[in-house]
Amino acid sequence: MPNRPFDELLDATIRHLEELREHGVKYVAATPQSLAELGQPVRTQAARPAGAAFVSRPSVAVPPPTPPSTPPIQAPNPPPVPALMPKKTEPVVAQPSLAIASPKKNLTRAEKEAAMAGLRQRALACRKCEHLAVARKNVVFGVGDIHSPLMFVGEAPGADEDVQGEPFVGKAGQLLTKIIQTMGLDRDRVYIANILKCRPDTPGQASGNRKPTPSEMATCLPYLLEQTDLIRPQVIVALGATAIEGLFGKSEGITRLRGRWLTFRDTPVMPTYHPAYLLRNQSLAEKRKVWEDMLAVMEKLGLPIGEKQRGYFLKA
Image (cartoon, rainbow, N blue to C red; front, side, top):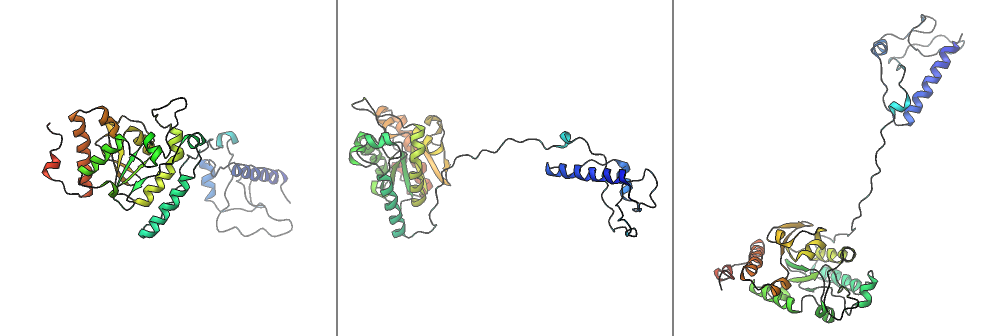
């Protein structure tokens, strides 16, 4: 005959174990006694003495079943549920990212040019920063050879760039052109772009420029990322601290960073002073620092360097 107290206890134990499993508990503690009893042969209820370990229930009016080859798992007295509940973990918050799809690895020249033309049209029609779109005269997309191994990145267009729709055409741009020529290159043999494609608006001011805000740079950065993905330059020259902030999201002093190679999306980056800084500071020593940065870029690209070039700005 069935043993009701035993049946009720076994059912309660099973229900409790199922509740533990629903709460993520995979294991329960076992006493040395219960572990030892697991290795003993399973006895039928008819032969079970009082106080023996739990065994499977035989069916009514059916001969006792043959003991299974693997002893059933014994159910020891489990600890209270709260002690076995898994620790709560803080939810994982996905970090925002710029989902820019990289182009195919080996685009033909025609495919690259078509892709860049399409990107340019999208940028020219951009109105993501409505306050900039209203104030601008032109979107300053970028200029130069999209097949070049060398790319210069500045911060944002100024008044002259806004009028002409081309980066670095003012006084700072003219100095940059001289630097490029001193490297033995032509301006149209490199690619020049900015973090921000629109001139930062200056409401209430008749002239002057302002630094782009982090929000403006983050909004416009995907265009530059697509430009770099298409051009795939071997070296990027970052002109000034704001360009570094736009690329890397950190605002460290350019004095500390210049001359030290960084890496942006697997591309070596040389930070250096913005040409506008050299217009304000005509020190021969400061000019030499920028030129040493350019010599490092030339070496990285495998460009020939003459003795005259190595000696620039060492003495008046």
